[in-house]
Length: 233
Length: 233
DNA sequence: TCAGCTCTTTGACTTAAGTCAAAGCGGTCG
DNA sequence: CGACCGCTTTGACTTAAGTCAAAGAGCTGA
Image (cartoon, rainbow over all chains, first blue to last red; front, top):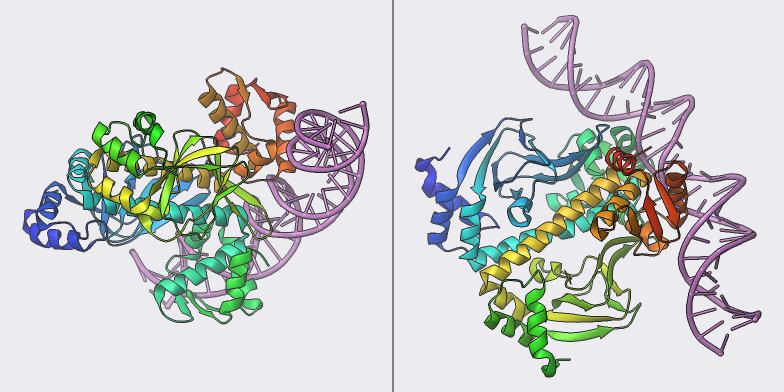
């Protein structure tokens, strides 16, 4: 679904994403030439683990969840991607298929960049290559933290770390807002809703936080930081 | 420690690594011009999490372990790298510091590539950039599997998957050889030696494998595959 | 060769977190 | 408005895996 009317604004938008920041106008035009804008309804599958990847995506509007599922149905969320973020690049550069599933968490508008055209563009454009390397390296760093958390920290530690991360990201002092349902947050933290619920109560009982639905107030930041650090009570 | 006498053979060796395969001779020469050969004794720290990364490494000889440690001392191994494999690239491209620790598992000879020189080379060399992208994407895929295993599979499932992986890698039919001490293997699988020992016995008792020290014979490949798939007994 | 390591195994026990079940709480859509 | 459906919470129970302790096994080097 190529939409010629929007080429101009698409070029501008692409230039503002971290992936394509700093690219010459001419290259951005080429890029927009190969880009396809596609839409997905909430809860629609974008791709599944094992699918062949013929290109990758950039979130224009909406939110996308990348996740894995065990045969018994337990879900582990790897990422939640929002506007401006790329996903699905692994098969483009490493070959093979997608290692995880992608689903639209909300109605989405995505930019799809077909593999071959895109690789040609990367080969001709060092700045783009370096931006991509930075993006993948940042994601490796994030996965490293996730492995660290899953393997070396208990649930309260992971939760504390996540709350501190959110508070930093939202720049709202000690107030923060959960951006996912508690069920989804549990899945992101590698646990289940019941356990998450108990741990949130526990953190409140011990005076670290104050819970009001999806709003949380950090009342003992230092304590929370200590908990995130050592990984357990 | 630049060793001019070895420039010729170094160029040839670099050209045979997957990272630099397919690069023009001229570029390989440039590369070897910025490369420093450094040696580390067994058990020596190469870098620690949090250290500034001024470049990255390529294993020439020996084995390197990349790992994290919890405050209580539990270790989680992320990778074991051998000859020809690069490590420590994350801070080169994503900025910031190393996310994990690196130690020499054996006496090692490493190639160190300083950041700035190397980035310039990447910018001038699309083939190199694409090789690097492939390497980082492959590592992301591997981490995805690791997160899947840690979060969605129990220890026997992870162990079964690892044994099948080893058997495939070693191309020795149903015979395989553990390449790490069982303590280190436990740390790679996200568990502890006692648990690993019990699970190996259990797999043997149930007829999946036959253990003889570090040699293991797969006696029920299909069963092991099923176990690796569903993740638990 | 044997003293002193580290690695591995086994046993008894503890514990974090998952399972199962049920009740409460909201929204929202006929 | 009210019935339904999904999300959340709570309680009782189970279980996988970690902890602690001790004994064996295997190497290594004096």
